[in-house]
Length: 309
Image (tube, rainbow, N blue to C red; front, side):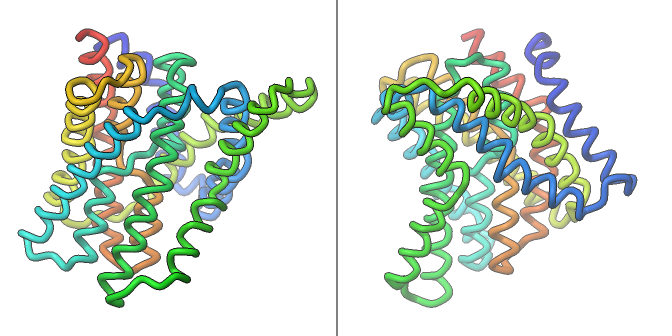
């Protein structure tokens, strides 16, 4: 575990650097917003396009992989919803808490970290996890929350959800990359160099932006945040491990990536959704902060356990 911890330490150190810069006021909130936008729309998109352009659809899409991750995640999602309802929380808050339990920081943290720690073989599986999180769970949340509040889901809402997924720059960049790969054409040297240089900025900028955004997190209900962090960092990877290693015949290397991806801390876009719908944003903010701090220890532990076993 020590070697894995030391390998991952520089990544979390970059997060800490961003946190310190923002906490001291050296890096203001407006700068964090602009840096996040740069990563989201440019650097990370270039990285994902470059990865996808060198893969075939068959190297990413696997029925067993999708079923294992999706069903295990839905089981944890349902458990978190149930616990929230037992605590007599409104249905909207239960849905937000469920997002905390299953949607990890795959884009900004997972892609660069897992590829660095687990090698190029991690690219396809981690992109598949990212696509499922974006296409399934964000859409599920939006539709169910609207049903909870308005009692119905219109065709317009479903169309907006689909278009939201299709317009997501991470989905777009992966789709375009796979499309280029399907053409079996090499990238022109200047284009490949451009993507390489721009994509190389994704890792340090994304990690710094994560830390800077954590510095602005407010705290509320630490006990609930600890439960949600435990669901994300412990229950989610455990459920995915059972599904991938016991129930479904997922290829071992892909199963390893899937379980580690499930052990990532709560994603920042859960806070964006909670804030947009005015539903427990401070609780989500606290869960994001707690889970990222705890992941410094839990993520290397999960990797070490899987690689050792």
